[in-house]
Image 1 (cartoon, helix red, strand yellow):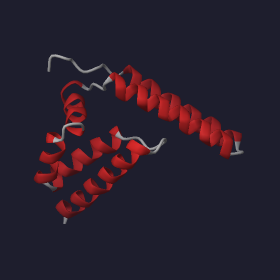
Image 2 (cartoon, helix red, strand yellow):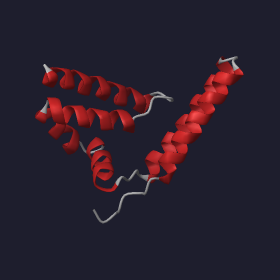
Image 3 (cartoon, rainbow, N blue to C red):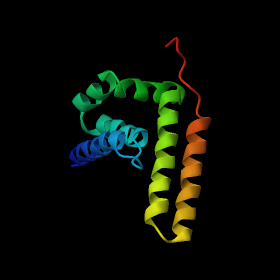
Image 4 (cartoon, rainbow, N blue to C red):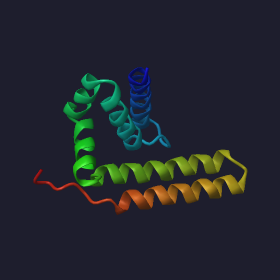
Length: 122
């Protein structure tokens, strides 16, 4: 039962990660990390596929081995956070919600930017 639940959650988070590639405001890397974690517990095949994937695998390996995020990923993530906040600014009227989301986005961006970049030699 635990294995089935882990497999379902792995595919759920993989779906969110893929959606996050295309939609601002939806983070890709955290959902990808959750996918890998649940896949390791629910499906060896999915876990191997993630790590062998030409794009997703590099992100996972860099994070796992070095706690690193590529410069490109950082730039895209921060730009998406800014774009998301600007969309909400034009759609929401509650100043407190906007301020709260702004503080959250600043915290996320700060954490992301503070992560090291992957070693190029690996």
